[in-house]
Length: 365
Image 1: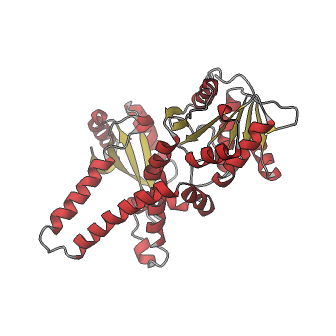
Image 2: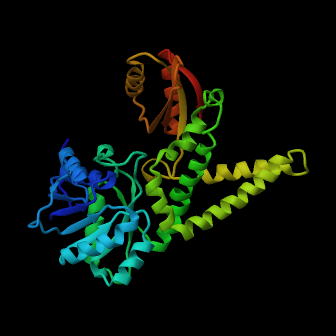
Image 3: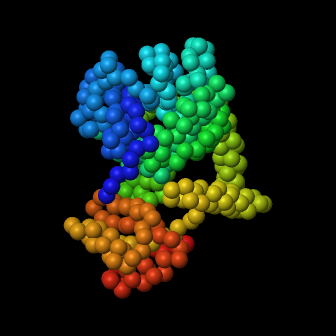
């Protein structure tokens, strides 16, 4: 497959070779962009270079664009240093909070005309260069937060960066960004972690019953605590506001469930759950499309080659698989493959897979 020519034509310097920095380097190098890498850790820098994310920076390298991918508590300081070191370069950062770095840079007297905060809504539970992927940003929102002192040329350059990484640029203010990610990213992390914490002392027999619901809601609880301490601290006002509202909702449900036979309790529980239905229906689907998919749950025998056979059969039917999720409990003779497809293709796929001997556990729209 031919790789499209990059929009970025100059050198890109990436400071910080963790998951985001290394992933960006891998993707840009695949398009032929000259990428130089810098990191406070020589070992991390060497590892990212070995993976092919770029080459270690030298004093002679003059970048057109600097991407700062360091923890939130040092983002402003590193951005200010890069602006000073490269007076012709545009500098962006990919920290998950945007108002605090901008405020700190104003206080430092940095050249804000060449600084533009941004944030790719992409990541994994694992960090570091070893977890990096060149397709990490594909189809994901890349928030860009312009401010009053910004040079328009800097905006264009950061948009080109997002597009070269096949992300979807989204423009909003730093404050709007922080309020948004508090709701869709930061508070979900807290809720997931609190639920997973209940499992520490859970009986082994109970954990043996765990299914997709528990795995779905606790997946991100495996994230790095040290990083999340920084994120939550940096975005404390917005996170606190959402958590307080969540606490109020939880208190209301607790009162209803504690007295299920009281007048109106069951109705209150039902309305709360229906509110969840309405909320989840607003989450955009694949690649930001606001559409829902149908699901088939297929039983897959725990034998070599069975999953590959299922995927081959789906391809032979000519149905595009939008998403796949796998569930397999230790010791179980079968696993579950949840296949998401467009609603109009679900009846045909159900019939075809059944005719080919596959057992369907569930099918719904």
